[in-house]
Image 1 (cartoon, one colour):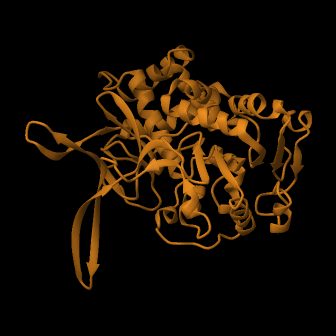
Image 2 (tube, rainbow, N blue to C red):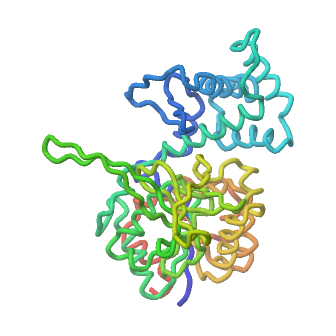
Image 3 (tube, rainbow, N blue to C red):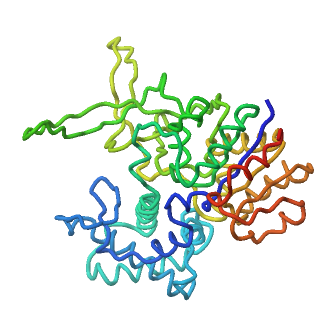
Length: 406
């Protein structure tokens, strides 16, 4: 079958109620330590009315998070209104890679220690502080893209106001393989693809449950009248195989808020977490006992998604998982007869290079759907079709006109 590719940016998810980049910048650019909790298990969260009985726990981590943001806004960019979480990520990840900003960040850390560790030895060095910050900041960022309904196993036949779009996808699947590439970390398209009555049987995302040796511990309280039964379950989790065998394939080029990295024998394995999972296990066969057994795994507590303007580009060619995703992206672009871009502002140089080299330079047709024309010369230079509307503002009839067989 002929192939049609999609490229989705943050604008695609805005009508769903997920935050825009501007909203994320506003929320993440200023965080007071009183707003957050960092658990002893290293998971950070915003406090939304919950009580935190252990405010003394990890107090200095919370203070460092607050004051490091203040330092960046006031002394590095000199204007909090110009804060952009991806540019900020590049700033401190450069330090972690020992490339740049060493003196600035070391100086801040010395000043921080002088305020809170007068006459005593700090418990964490500067690098450890920034690693702690990175872990918590990414977790807090991921929490802004979380919606519990994306974990509900319920069938749907439509999803207002996206009904025309998903009906259009259903039509295309009759005669095409659809390759959806998204730069978003949220779970919106994953959820619709897995549960929409016209899409789920065609959907694949490179993760598989069958044959997975990975499990998560799920603790749940069941209520029966006045009785509460406390139960703990082992729930099998999907692991990444890189197999996309559905007619509707989803490639999350920048990762996902619920992708996890599990380490075994110094090998990084991607799994897909699930709702309310607390710890992770791997089922292995013990040759000495001749039995299967569960082993606790070491996992990266931060969600596995890419951030930063330059840092992302490095990971495109450095991390085997993302190398595989971008190999698919390259091949899909080369084989597609049309590319439909929705809600992407063309601000990622790495993505733009792929578009130019593997699609646009071949004289192929690109359609750009966005209420505000992106600031890029690629649209005019390659004579792309620009539709000045949001994904939810286009009728089914107008979407149908983009079907190559119409």
